[in-house]
Image (cartoon, rainbow, N blue to C red; front, top):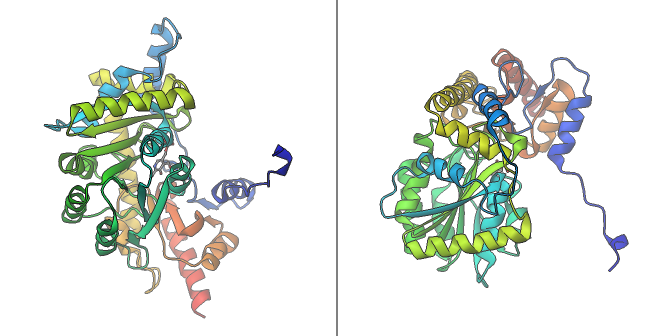
Length: 396
Ligand SMILES: Cc1ncc(COP(=O)(O)O)c(C=O)c1O
């Protein structure tokens, strides 16, 4: 069929929102739509640790020759303790990918290899790109309700009920921390039950970890991942350094296989490398070299950790400030204080979201997702007043 018969695709609604915000002349407009960290002044700065590492790379780099499909091996190795801890009895193999998205795509392609009849179980709501990436590899998806936005709670019964229908060899996709779009992570007793159920049912678990360190801390945010890796024999991890190192456009990520069998991990990695060769051949070098330089230097690593702490503290301060407000009986902002990471999903109708934008210049992502890192502390009262106004209009 000729390309002339292709039908035009709609623009990504989030990208349309970004364009609309850029054209909005109102000086006090608030952008909570884009999923990047912003400081109190609304900037997404390059971290000082990154600047210093880049400086060193420019001076020291002797060659730009190819690295191979695995990318920067020392970068991957340097991440392992941060992500997995010591993990006794677990064999971890990894490779560098273009961002967490690249890692998810390798995972999806690997699962599609020999996975005829395999079903991927995806809890909703979730990051809007999960389903497209998994489907692009030809995987069959089944969705289930995992977070109840109305009550702002992780839906353990629905999650366990879905897993009871799954068959051995099926895949469960979970976010390891700082759930996008809700900020609602399971409690320790809940994720333990999910991990036990996944292991008992013979499932492979794909953990998406895109925000380590932006919830409670680097170690704390790895608890769910480590619990799964200890209990479930085959875990795949799609990891992003783009948020916690603020390297977004440099596209830094890694794909890991963590198995209780050394042969399984090495075989899976060799297949992943063959898949990479047919997709992007080799990942871009610069961002991973920056992360490796930081993690190999105790002073730079300490500086990065302080900068990460500062990002997390700002997000926590915004959450705390919002949590003290009660915008309307139907909309408890109190729950936001205890949630994790950059995002919260407000249980608002599409009409209310449109009014917030039109009447008050407050931009939320479709579905009511708010990037709280985009809210200056000084704008919290204005944001709450806007919410109160639109909700009062709706009630009237
Ligand atoms: C849950 C989740 N996973 C993965 C990603 C992919 O991030 P990147 O490809 O920029 O590393 C994102 C980005 O927003 C995300 O929110």
